[in-house]
Image (cartoon, rainbow, N blue to C red; front, top):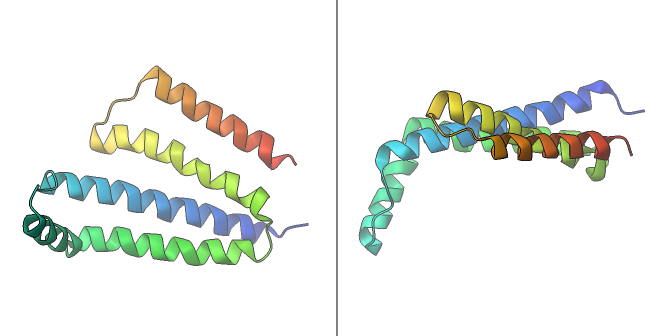
Length: 124
């Protein structure tokens, strides 16, 4: 039997990954599109890289990797990995709420299929 704390590690992985994705999209959108020229791209990327919120998004991904490593010490990959797809649900909902992105019936149905897959995969 797998101790419940290891599922909390997976949940933390999902939450930190979700946070990083939402923050990165939110902040990068404020900078506009990637420029065409090489020099302008490099300048753009360095400017974006040193945005404190973007740094927090990268940090969240780094922290998520530590939680994932902790979870993988006790949970088989085939059991734990499907749970990471829960970030799809969070990103779908909160990209609509926080970023104003569209929420279509097809996106909702696709996400529900992912969740159904998680339920089926976790039974094995």
